[in-house]
Amino acid sequence: MTAVLDHGGHAHGHDDHAHDHPHGWRRWVYATNHKDIGTLYLLFAFTMLMIGGVLALGIRAELFQPGLQFVNPELFNQLTTMHGIIMVFGAIMPAFVGLANWMLPLQIGASDMAFARMNNFSFWLMIPAASLLVGSFFMPGGAPAAGWTLYAPLTLQMGPSMDAGIFAMHLLGASSIMGSINIIVTILNMRAPGMTLMKMPMFAWTWLITAYLLIAVMPVLAGAITMTLTDRHFGTSFFNPAGGGDPVMYQHIFWFFGHPEVYIMILPAFGIISQIVPAFARKRLFGYTSMVYATASIAILSFIVWAHHMFATGMPVTGQLFFMYATMLISVPTGVKIFNWVATMWRGSMTFEAPMLWSVGFIFVFTMGGFTGLILAVAPIDIQVQDTYYVVAHFHYVLVAGSLFALFAAFYYWAPKWTGVMVPEWKGKLHFWWSLIAFNVTFFPMHFLGLAGMPRRYADYPMQFADFNAIASVGSFAFGFAQVYFIFGVLIPAMRGKGTPAPAKPWDGAEGLEWEIPSPAPFHTFETPPKLDPSATRVVG
Image (cartoon, helix red, strand yellow):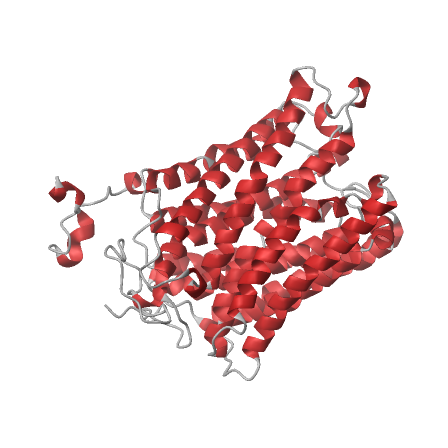
């Protein structure tokens, strides 16, 4: 029996991976190895990013000038809705889960994720879900067009695609919960001896906390969309005032999920930045303990701020004050993080390779997005700019310049470990500057459009907004083309192994167990738990 289970140990030397896993398509379909599943997640997320990006360019092409150009208002609303849902649930979240799958076992010295088959299942659930979302455009009546928030009463009036959307969200939620359980058990039970919780890399900490958030809020979303489903088909009136229901109740339930969700999308990004900045400042992360506590504080506070999305729904002033102050309070631990990153860079021996550029870009632009969030937290201001392009500018500054930039930083940082080749520096830098400039040209003008009163999710607008919309649309296409460059100029060559071979530790200031194994990472790593030095960053035996 041992001969079957043991895969031949190290007797086969370098060739031992030839016997222990299927090859060809079976390797991917039946994947139980964390690296393969991580790769699948990352490729899936990037595919969805491209699909979501095409929808965004459809939106921006329509808004290039006033009047109706390319799409009718109904299709426009389908584009805005599906762009949001696909980007959040199909691109950003799976990308972070892919990174967790790839990197967490390497960072904590584990042989694999705790539940290998569940890991495979949680990935493959995403494929039918994504197919339902993308396929909904081809259903009678077109895709859901109720906004990514899926607000009643619109959702009660939509065609069959709404049901497909609800089913897809259920699948994605189940996938997230399984992935989270896997991450929690892996981190809590499979760390190498000597790696205490307070010696873990920040990326592992942020993902541990994120996984708890996911398990807490995904069922809430499932509840909200199931109530929508029963209202649509089974005669209930949760959100239908005619039967004694209340559409505002939907908003409360949705945002009780929705606000922690935005932190689910940013906390792993904070973890990535906390790994990269010390590596290129060549210093230990400033205030590690405070980073851990700040992450936990953000996660706890995220549950008491949900109604700041609802200042304009007739909330009593006491409610407005509570949610306003609670939202402002959450900026304190976020500020602690930004201070710690800046303090890590302070007087460090900094070099600006591609991962560091993306990280510094992240800190700068994410902080801007944070400040516009604080402005929106002030109820009297929010009532003026609610549902305008100011809000669109705010959340794209934290989700694109936040989550997406951090994901690109992670790619440039860890790609040598994944592919075994170095990405040429000039390519990473070109991609960064092109993306950063195009991003700001797209979204900065939206602050002014919002302050001037341009409402979001409209296919047409008055003449006074024409100039800034034209600028934003040009910027959006430039940003889109930057990501096309990334596919063909960076990603595919790296995946094909084109470039100079990467050493085990390509970044001289990097610390952590992932740099103790060769590049590219072998199929199996840490099959016997490694013995670590006192800092838990190096293998000693």
